[in-house]
Length: 616
Image (cartoon, rainbow, N blue to C red; front, side):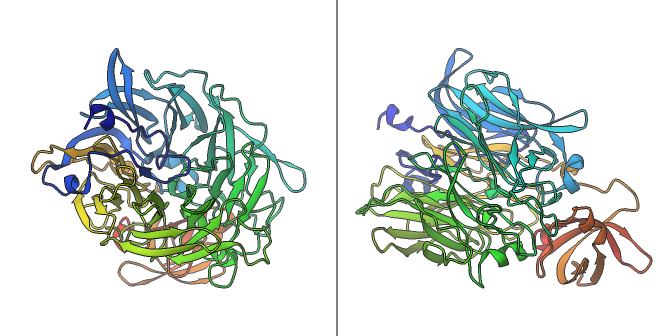
């Protein structure tokens, strides 16, 4: 095996490529036999300055301070970008892009993040130009702002002046709606395509839903000049409840792009009344095909029907946008353009990517197939081509990876061919991110990688490796995730004989030649990783919603007691995420002499009581 063959793969974008396949077909070192051997394990654990929500990126052969290195780039929620040696983990460069926004300054003190929000969406690298594009959320003079940077990957210096992100769009009544950096969250991975950089925007915990709407924005690569057009997903001038959203968040999955340059993404919930959807003015709960200049929505797919249709998804906060879009490469025996999307309800839709559907609410839609994947997907599916020449989709809803054989042509088929043993989770939302490594499509070379979310009080993550038939090859701890209120959307990066997993304040590197018993560094969870009430009379209570009567809720707390919550003020001030019966909520406010909580804020909580912070 030549050194050149080992050092072949660069990982420059979320889930490896613009189709978001999550597949590295150039891995010759980490074969199934090698991964299950005693020599595979932890090689290094590197301390970082804050939680990492962005996927690490990798570029080989970089000249850093007059020395060639293979370099891993890691961006943290402290607005720090690191360049680390890919073999040893040594920090070669680090650059601060500003002061991140503290949780106390977020809408509703949204806790679906670390102690602060800085760099949340995965950056993207233009390998030919040697530029890393990254969006930093910064806080100065009590004002949040987003900056788009173009960094030289050899020095981390700005190649052009960073731009402050702003945008404007026309609503249905021809009034102008302006981008609001205080109400919009940049979480989806960045996309580099068509000579442009694209980004999607969502909300903070659905708080300030009267102000927050989904956006897809773009800038010219190199110059950072904004594109003339942009996409505002909700253009309604008025809504009965003034509740807009239709966010683009996808659990951090990157916007996808087809070979012809069209942009794909998924939108989330809008008004919980269920009557705000409009196929042209408010494309909530939909997969969207957008022109490369962002001027035209070319087609959409919106689930319809009584069971999993968009009305129910809005009413029950079952966002389609909890998962991203996977675009399939052309399939054996057919010139096919297929897409896959999965959301919170765990139904995987196989779609015609050239015409997602006709956009009519009353139509049956044009999903080619639907498959139940065993649980909700806060994730994106993966893809590889097997040795038989047929494509494979790896779904990762619930707590299990499932491998589906793709048969394209006039009558497409998805056939379940393998499934993994359970992947840990349970303290956060279901699903997990996978990647796939193989030596081309050679038989016996496929390894499916996954990172399980916390499962118990240790708050450890777990790295898994499975063979393509579902047999477990390896399991080990790559780091911790103390912030149980914010999902660990961790993507394992596999390239050139190494595995990289970023987590809470650390990066773990796995590979061959590991020392026996090596363990990740112990990283303390800072107390500021949660939002404590700032006034003595403010209390927090978590519980499962038993019933809803207008703005009044009844919760069942961890002790099994019933708690009455008056949410009137929270709803009136748009400081409430829509509650749903059977799901958890965190209520923050005051308690009267009768024991009724008068909520100032209602935030979603994870359904597992093990993940709840102590009531106070």
